[in-house]
Image 1 (cartoon, helix red, strand yellow):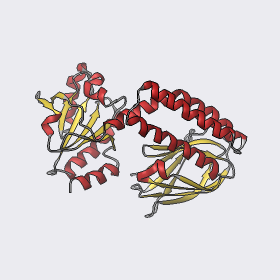
Image 2 (cartoon, one colour; image 1 turned 180 degrees about the vertical axis):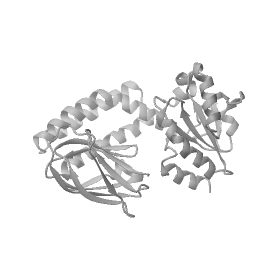
Image 3 (cartoon, helix red, strand yellow; image 1 turned 90 degrees about the vertical axis):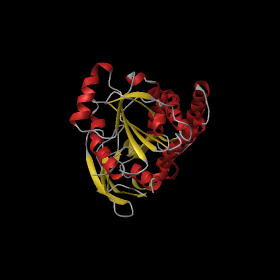
Length: 327
């Protein structure tokens, strides 16, 4: 089942009913939403054809985090919160909006999300470590000042100051650097690679010039990577004969070379199967700032990066992109 996950990580709460928890995710490509607490409580809500969901949320007061696929949004719920969430799936950060009782505090959090996104976009165009650190400190100081002069309730101001602004002040520079590096690659020539294939041949990225290339960075020991294999195989079949190559690059260590070979053969993995020359330290892997897998990359026929952190095969987003590109 394709779904949107709304994961609410509570900063401290006590159980109460929050009525009329509802929202509309425009242009959604999922069929349900989920609400989950840090303690494992979970509630599902079906999305109708217009992306609308509605129900009762059995949770108490606190700070939470709302996730939509790879997007996330801090959320503040009190015991009498009655909010309506509106967002566009394709323009999450710039469109997320809250209406109803409790909307003002949540819209402040949404503004924080937009501020961070705007800073990331600016730094993707150019900014060294010192500039990023200075800009991040300026942003968190602005958040703190706006919060201090606001009329929000004591609990909200305390939690946001300690959890979001306090932690962000320490972690924001690294987060911005990582994301900005990824975005800075898009629209530019991709870093190249030259790796050994399953049959011992040397394969270069330049060999695929003239085709779109969908790259899967994975490893045999990676559970989430293996979960994507059936979906990737379905993609390979769906776009068979189209102007696209599917390339899987393993970051298994040299000592696991035979294990990689065996899995490729036993699982009948398709596409072009390669293994990186220096696992995580391979130039290509480092150039893309890859620190976790699976990671997917989409490159155009000219060798330019379309998406440096593309959607997974299980996500309809990548299918929608390829359907348009491969008409």
